[in-house]
Length: 190
Image (cartoon, rainbow, N blue to C red; front, side):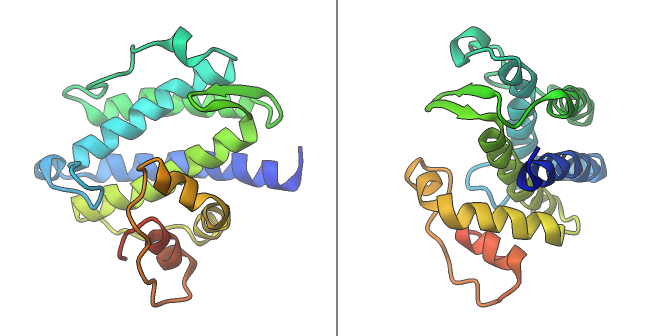
């Protein structure tokens, strides 16, 4: 495994833990609060990330989008978002630890190495972890190593994400801090 692969896979593991800690810290009244992710509540953010994690084991086993189908559409967290997170992140974490960065993953836009998929999933964990924390009124710091890594990835790919509707227009960071720059690149203000 290359140094980048090891770092990305380690950061995924850390990202799962960090996101999970935030999920478990959400106060009951905060689940319906708006998040910085336009039109999504705190619960919606968690539902999205849980849904993404549910796909991981399938895709790392080589299944296609068509094979997985619509089983994870809609509400995947029910009345127990933290429990849904725990189950999904456990399965995803196991799949990542058993995966290879070179294996091919079949995504909606084409086939890519698992390392590229891991980079995308790390973006999701880090950025939506911040959305979750900010919306729920929790500490919204981003791990500096994760911020630097994801910023480096998005400096090369943010326009692709933006053209697909994942991010709003970039805003002025007004800071050299990697976390602030990362959030600004995704259209968020720290």
